[in-house]
Image 1 (cartoon, rainbow, N blue to C red):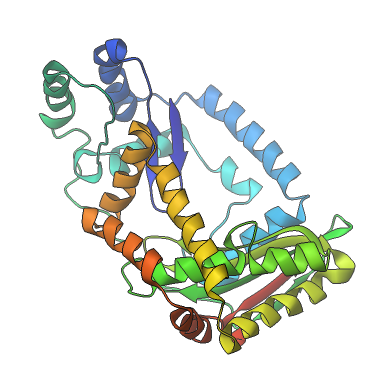
Image 2: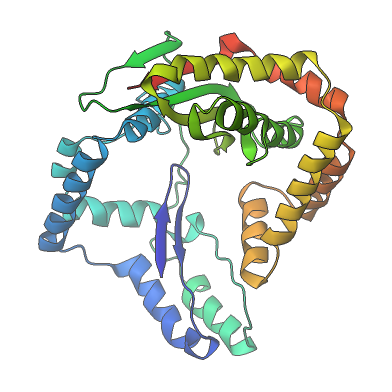
Length: 334
């Protein structure tokens, strides 16, 4: 059993042998609806969490990841907020019980299943999860937070724990998954810094030797998205690495990518899709991603067509549109 929580979703995942499914299902239901949060156990968790936080705060990459989100979205926005040690001390077992009833409820839950399920198993699922309005909450959660990004775009932070490396983050706001530019930008981002053979890796890692790795990614969240370039580099070359990132952006704006390089990226992405649907659980994850974002199977097939048909001209136009230097926040924590 695994439990995961991010800024948009909480996920409970259970894997078991088919013959044990009927026994485990009531237990999972009980965990969601009737978990007891004992204060002595919570105290131990808080103590351990505060210790982990104190260790993580010694690392420049951890600080950089927190700060770039704050600068992009604003500290009051859920995507920009982060916790301090004192926040843990304010949590009580009653808080957790109240939150469980408020957020983990019938009308706020989707269930995804993969495997061999009998008709009896399906009936049991409906009997346990579908017949009662468990943890009933008639008012669905509607976020009302507004973005409040920092005014300053170039931020340099001196870490209290000196290090030979600095953490570099460049980030700008981006469109959501429903925007027509989103999928084509996945291709541009991959070419730019999304896999080991990318432009950023070839230049800043292989040629310049400034870093062991540099990555560009699309942070796609439910209510806001961002482009993020992330790397750790020697303190003396952090600024040089940033210049090279912008240089690669300008090249993509001014020069058409070759058919050979674009085909390499296309094949890489199409191969990744094959790997991601290689098995029952992988297919379920793909469907889960589509459904939770409001898509159907047509999105899956249209993505493949975009991957196959995108042209160097489209790549160049996207670079001109989204690789604007003035739109990026620059953060170095050293």
